Amino acid sequence: MKKGKKIAAVLLTAIMATSLLAGCGGSKTEETKTPETQAAGETTAETAGETQAAAEGGSGSVYYLNFKPEVDGLWQELAASYTEQTGVPVTVVTAASGTYEQTLTSEIAKSEAPTLFQMESKTWIPNWGQYCYDLTDSYINQHSTYEPMTNEAGEVLGVPFAVESYGIIYNVDLMDEYCALDNAVVASADEITSFETLKAVADDIQARKDELGVEGAFSCAGLDGSSYWRFTTHLSNLPIYWEMVDKGVEDIKALDGTHVENFKNLIDLYFTDSTCEPALLSGKTLDDSQAEFVDGLAVFYQNGTWAWTADGDLADMNIAFLPLYCGVDAETDNIGVCTGTGNYWCVNKNSSPEDIQATLDFLEWVISSDEGKDTLAGAMAFNCPFDTFADYPMANPLFVSANAYTAAGKAPVSWMGLQCIPTENWKSDLASALIEYAQGTADWSNVEKVFTEEFASEWEANQQ
Image 1: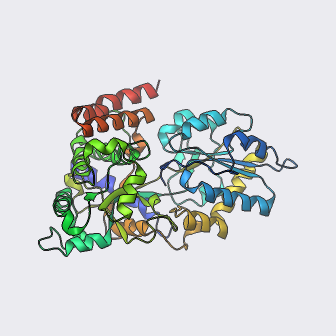
Image 2: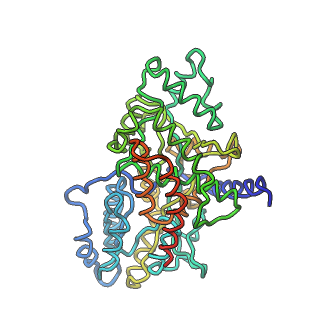
Image 3: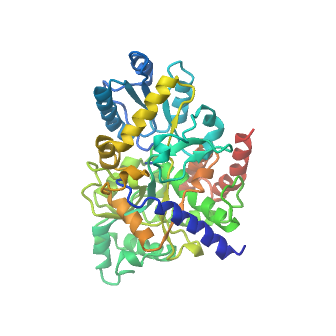
């Protein structure tokens, strides 16, 4: 197959996947992001078993180990409401940011284990697939509009509950101010359809930052533990994805590194056209990066739809997405933002039949009741891939922006590469290599080795 046809085939697949989102309301996450300490009175892992054991008359109970700290309070409220209405005890425990698998490992071994947990991608199946109840006939799977996670036997191990997008978020008002300057590179953000133009605009903003009243084109590319996932997980999707497109594959466990230079294009732009010097980035947090953006000190900020909530810092801002252009020929004027999911609900098959049924009933209520939909698509601002949300209004402007690219015929960049990342250790080592590169203590070759030599060795070790 010729390269152009392979690219078209993969991009068409991405369009078809995202087209399933049409009509879905509200706005992931991601993945855990900002560390949050649970407030007094909230359920912890230590007390989960006691609460679950309070189920009366064998009617079953629910213990949900939640992946996303930023919505813990909303899950606590929803669980309490369901218990009040049905009498079924629902416990929600939220793992601290970056500790989900560690917490799951500890909790799944307990006699009162989670009845409901999450998997992030198919790479989790070797460790966690054995605990998954087959959701093929479940209400959530029957009403899903997105591809489930399955094993080789075709069993549905996980059903996605939030589809998310990420890219370069920009301040529309600041961008308009820049475009109004004499000799601006572009007259509108709509003209940014390639890395070449993105770089020219960012370089010009950086050179004229005093004139525009900002401190940099991009808010700081924080490389501390609360922030580096934006680059080691999300941005790293690009060199993996584009190599998969070149090769016409949907799975990959060894990289030639043909697009690591494209990854470098954006990293260099983030490091140089920034609010701070690269050597300081190892101490910069996600909060630092977002605060700079919210305060109008930068025009651009890489993050995803999960950054917006109805009562959050971005709620009153006029914001939109730019795709993650990185210099690949096929992307110019053809792509939208990265869209996919890392949020799969999984039911513990080792739970009692009563608890399994109670968990399935709870999930049905969450995606079908007005209260559940108001929480997931409204307060949590998730983009929920269920037909029960077909008429729910979309509140998150970042989803509106992401869908506008698709409506204009731009193919969303899928999360194929992200779902092929071998291990958490690989991400950590990539972060270390990026920090050394930022500080000038090592050159780019260390980053290249992580993408090539270590990518393959981590996959090999993960399969043994």
